[in-house]
Length: 412
Image 1: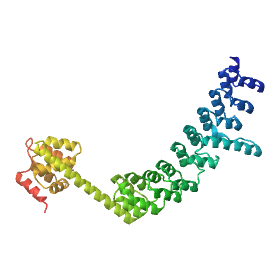
Image 2: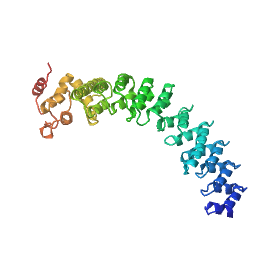
Image 3: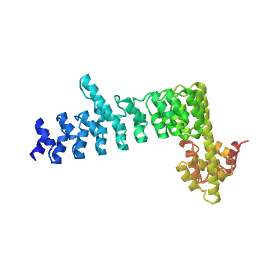
Image 4: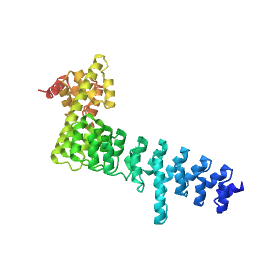
């Protein structure tokens, strides 16, 4: 009990005492000792062969463990020991003189090489995740991990490692790269044109999507134009294409012909549009809006006819539609009930004429109370210009005058 307490409190212990504790039959004593940061290298080296995997895991995780011991642990029979060693390995930068450092780095490289060839995928995966953004790892180990048979090992290296050159990446792509790996490469920061050309040439949609979303990737104008021509059939490309930092006028105009309206608005807001392209985008937006209104009107007219046929196209239904913001149904309902052409109804409602709108409501057999609601909410008539009911609900104009008002809005 006293020995355990002395070790756990990190109180200084002598070399001789640590040697005895390393041989102690009590597992908890050896475990606590293995966590110390002040042990002599030879003690840690000795404990790398401890019969307990738990102790060896602590030695593998200990930053003070000498690289000679790590070389032993890299071949440990327990994969959890090797996993813990792989998690620590990027910190192995011994502060020694040049001769000692060279020898130590040879050990480190050997450790990394062994782990990179480990039969357990999880060991290689942890190693790859540990080394993915390390700048001082051996390039040969990085290339081995980048070509690993398992995506979970290769992808972190392919996406993040600064030690992979364009030549390395092109070799991997040319060798027949799976889609997930191509996508990992596509997400790398600062990809050059040679690599992006190679990715586009594969015609892998998932990888090209990732490439387009990577705003740091340099994609030649010719390649972007090529992708824009293919994009009508690949919706996943639309948004990243619209958001690319550089787009030619040709690509911008072509995108405008098929992307969603929200993306068309994004194109209109792009900085640096030439005047002709801006005008083309505006014309396309107007065309879309007109088409939407036409389609909306056609749909609402069918609904109005169905309601009328079932006897449900009454003032209450239209009033509820008006409150709900379904103006298209109200306009169509007035056209159906009045038996006037939809164009004429639309012209009356946009005329800002209180008399014209009131006459339309009368023709549609609406109550004068609802006619006032139509004037204000659909016709846009200001409150001080509204026509009000007379005699507790009657229309304020004679039938003859209302027919005359409607005749004013007759279409040719």
